[in-house]
Length: 416
Image (tube, rainbow, N blue to C red; front, side):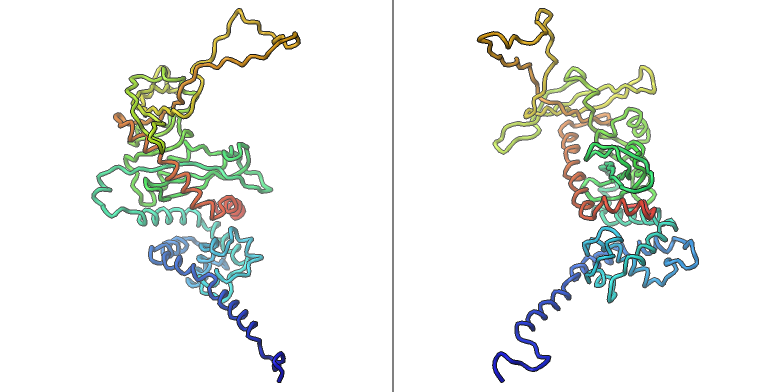
């Protein structure tokens, strides 16, 4: 038989290599998810989520919540490992042809869109959002416990709390709020996120899009305490959205210590502060030059609901030497002609505008604590950016947070 001919049904060596490569790729797809599945088993996440679903009473006789525990676990794993298959919402299952979800759920084929959407909707109507949120808070509390229980019990807990608004595009009318990323007022959902001092996410709750952080912060603290977390005498670091005098006063009366940033319209230069101490170096650049200084100071915050009453605050006053701002607005010369310059005259030359005096930009970090170390307080607040803002991007953006919010609005499942 000639070299180029072969029997019917036989496969050339090149085709056999191609088929083997394809089969190997199919086997490897989703295999990495088995490590995540083992981690979910080891940390007790699956057992806690199954306990939460078992507490949800089905609203209809033929509800999928009445399925066998094996089927419920497969549906739960499908929702839990959506990002593994590159999916962000159940609608993506319409065009999903991969094997990753089938591998981690132990099925020959992954669940389809209609079945998964029906399960998610029935779970939401049965109160699954409340049960799952509480269980997740309990799981993270036990997951991120420190090894030294004595040291943790003696020290007050420290939390970073932040709020985010995510737009939701829907045909229905939903509460609107200011989306900080775009500066637009859009319908959406408001997220309140609680992280510990190492940047580990402890709890996330979802609420109306018009809810302010001063309302959501006490709620997320109470929810975390309900889940088993310790919040007594907690030190809470929040951005300037929490800079409200009655809000700080009420939390201080509850035994908490608040650290936040003073708004620019609440002070006017260095003269707004009292008992300003000596500025000491805080941050250096790569050449060893001081670029930020810090000093201890005090600030009296007026209470709008109590006439002639103030809330005393301790301040870590940072002076950023890299950023210069106008010191004082230039005074107008009464003898100066306010009209246009005589540019039409012959030999007229434009003169540069006189530069006014500048000073280093102030960054006042305030706290309700009675005594502070200015450098330690400044470093604690500065760590909010890598411990919370960057963690939000690392944990939530890969999960398709904006799309998840839209899906939760559709199914009425508003817990994260």
